[in-house]
Image (cartoon, rainbow, N blue to C red; front, side, top):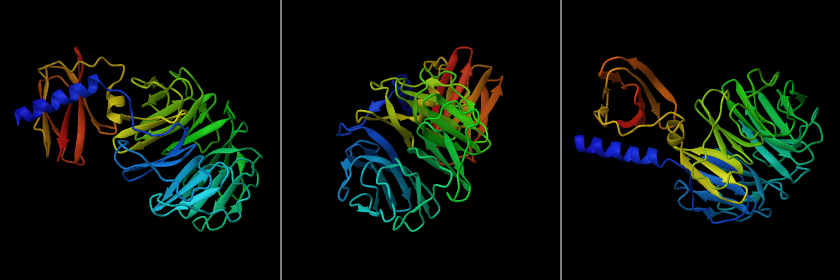
Length: 389
């Protein structure tokens, strides 16, 4: 058992020391415009069609059969159905993992579809010039739902309960609470009117705009800028994992916040293209698409644990055992320490401040999987990992 634990520690040290973005084997040059995740399947919408990876980006397959327009600006998934919004062909539907596509455009006046979102049986499509359309029958027919919406491209759509938010090009954010039957502007304190992306965490709504990230905790009634640490404010993509928010920018790469956007840290080690056009999370990885068709991946845990703190994994008097663990783990360290346990997504599970060298922690309620132990002492931060079985 000791040999196994030692190998685990060595492996973790290597991971932390080399924590960085890695380019996946994406075989194209067109811009990556969007992602959609279904289980272990990653779908990438690009300017030359849809690509699928089922093995963490190790290989990608182009799945364009039936797509008459291959500039795919939006993707949305409902059960086994995948919808793609295209630049000139409207909406396409695939019910077999993208092996073939069929146009579903009856009633869709505009075939320039910029955004898609799904809530229950309702599919909303944001278009380039004709507002928002609603389908309640899997795309078989569409109805315009634009009362109160301006004549502006709908660049982002997101659903939060009974509320639908639409982000426009230069005219701000709009809200509908009645399935799109009526809309009204929700722009108070929203300094930027050019909205590229939304993300939701509980009651918090984040908007990625040309002028940075804005947060609303009251359904858009007011917004607060959240840009401390952002070296560029042109935010093109947002995604959320637990308490962690990730923002992709046009010139500064990707930024991470763990405090609702109050502060941001750039996370670009290894990333050679810092124009991020799309972000997504699948399993333990975050994926970033760029304007020149690259897709990069990085372990979320690497981003979370590789903070501005001084990481010192060469401290040899800190041990975590047993590994794997079932009910309890024991942490041996030198006197005073603050111990944090995080899951593979970087979410904080427990925090314990101790002033003794032998600590037993109950992990019986943890789900099966890998966890990280951060031991903060006067010598810096040491990271260990253990498996809960």
